[in-house]
Image (cartoon, rainbow, N blue to C red):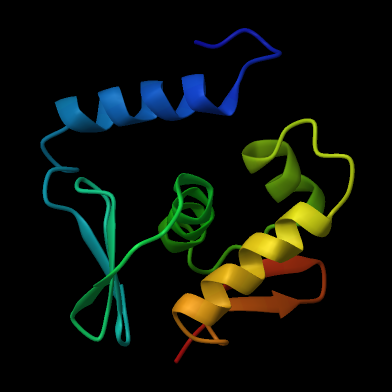
Length: 119
């Protein structure tokens, strides 16, 4: 249970704590084409090679990877990942960073927002 307003870091810490206690989560690895996201280790691999991401970039990719068919509105992503951001520019920057480090298709822009793309 979290009381609003809360900081993203607090939410992530609680989610990670729950994940550590969950047997199903241990070793969980999400894969899509050449992309692999190791949730427990918080590591990302592209074609078998580890790719270093900032905590915010990882949080964005993690959210999309955990909900691969869901379209997240820009507003929802800003609220969840960048609370207090005054413009969508910060979101666009992190989307661009993921596309540059991984591949342009990884974060797909669709009507209404963004989702995890398909290779």
